[in-house]
Image (tube, rainbow, N blue to C red):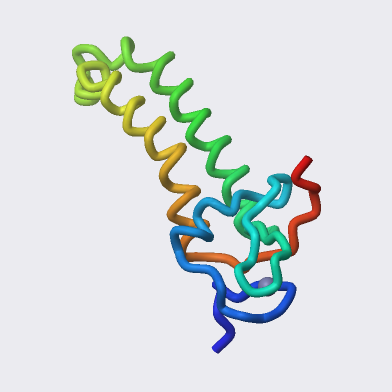
Amino acid sequence: MDSIYKCPHCGEKTFNPIKKAFAGQLNSPGKVCMNCGRRCVNGKGATIFNAVYSVIVFALIIIIYLNAPKTAGTAYSWIDVYELYINMGLIVSYFVVPKLVNAFFFRLAPAIRSPH
Ligand SMILES: [Zn+2]
C-alpha cells in the first residue's frame, strides 16, 4: 500500500507522523526530505480539511459566546456555566486537531512556496 509518509519527490518513506504534523499546509514552506533534500507539505486534502475545520471552530466559538447567556434557566444552562471551558477546549482543538489530521491522514505534496 502507498504510504502517506512517502516523499512526493523521491518516493522514499522519509516522513513520520510527527514530522508530517509539522510540515504545514500547501501555502507553508514545508519540511525537507532526508533523502532528496526537497521540501514537502501536507497536500490539498489536509489543506481543505484544516480550512473547513478552522471555520467550524471559529463559528462555534462565536455561536456559544453569543448564545450561552440565553441558556440560563433552560436545560442547556450548562453551556452558560461551562462556556469558558468549552471555548478553551475549542481553541485547543483548533491547534491540535489539524496537527493530528496532518500526522495520520492525507498525502504529502511538493512544497510550492520558497523558504524565503
Ligand atoms: Zn525525497
